[in-house]
Length: 213
Image 1 (cartoon, rainbow, N blue to C red):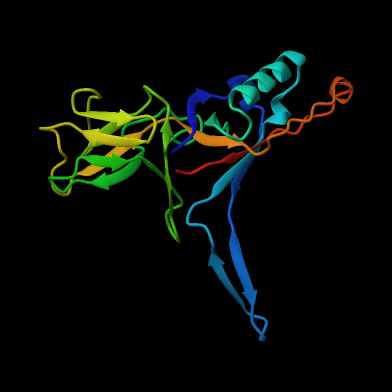
Image 2: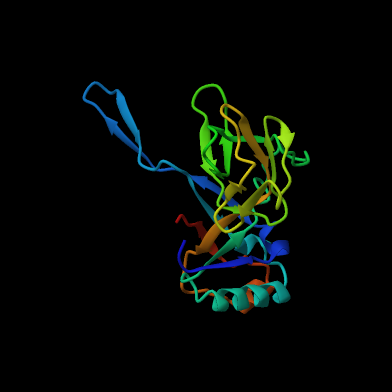
């Protein structure tokens, strides 16, 4: 991922932001009235508005400084999605068996982190590119591995790599638990701030969009 700063958007502002996943679906109506639907994107893309979290002049100043350091849309950064930032269910602690990330074949050492949504009809596997440092737990065949001894995790890419002598055996389930951030950038090069309106309670618009490598 080019032009990315491994820095977290001010957390107190992010946790009051708004937004969620976006899909792009192409729909063609036939002459009979039936529909043909095609997914244009393999992965959803999240959009956020950080403006909902800006309630004070201090917070607004912090966002302007953050925007300037990122040079507007130039540099990406980390965003904490209050609704969806854990491999576990809401209010449940992360465990090493939360998500299946692969199966051993006796040779493969690298496993990308993923989070699976749904189970019955068409489960979706979301690549997790920005795990929170220190939060990743991994297990092989339900036996928890030790970071730095059995495996390492690149928190800039979300790749778990098993060290020599600890490669998962053939058929062994590889699972992981983690907290994660969303890689985003500002979706504007212009922050319009009307201080008189802000003082009267107006919410500034600060759009963000998820980026992919």
